[in-house]
Length: 279
Image (cartoon, rainbow, N blue to C red; front, side, top):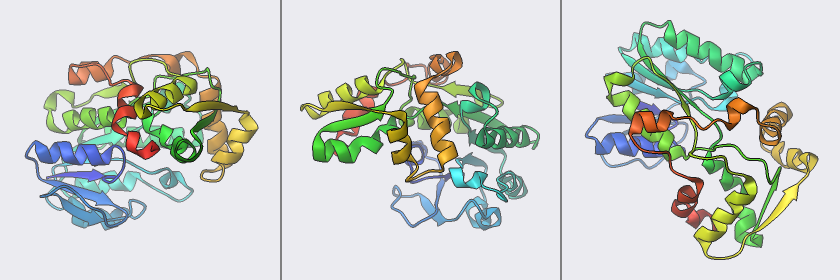
């Protein structure tokens, strides 16, 4: 049995499906009731309460651990999840971390994530750590404006980073869960090229077969929009990366190719597969 947390998200959905199609027994964990593939067990649990994971972990041998940002709030102790996994008989944990633990290690959430990485390394369990950079699916922030006004509004229109398709993260996670060769691996996951917001808008337009205009926001305008759904500190941190990526954040990693034997998918591929969100 393999347990997938965050099973209804952009990574968890394709990972759950891939594991089920590989013939593995899968338990999908999410905070709310949700549809899952046939044959997959679904458990509703809140990772902020690690003890509540016991029913999901019963009989499990491997765990994909994806933590939402609010677990880094004061008083949260996600390390307890690793303890619950070990106590429940789980042998292998694949942790979704972030590239930021090496590119910008001083931020509050990245310090907490690095500590969790260390806890996993010291747990006595088999482990692998995935460190993705920016996600292609963050373009879904623009879906409403594209649908209603045929516009992408974003800051730093000509500054790019090598964003990754979440489906590639899921594929790497599946490999790490299923293949002993990846035990002890730390993988930095990026897309195949640096791509700017302006070029992302062009890729969305191509997928739609209709024009999409790009409008460049000021940093203040972007922060105002972002703080409607995230803390101001996190918005500033994100804007620092988007506006002035450092060399480590611009690096295209070979690790997707190394694990999967193929190049990571370009943003245009993600846009074509998800075009319905923009119609």
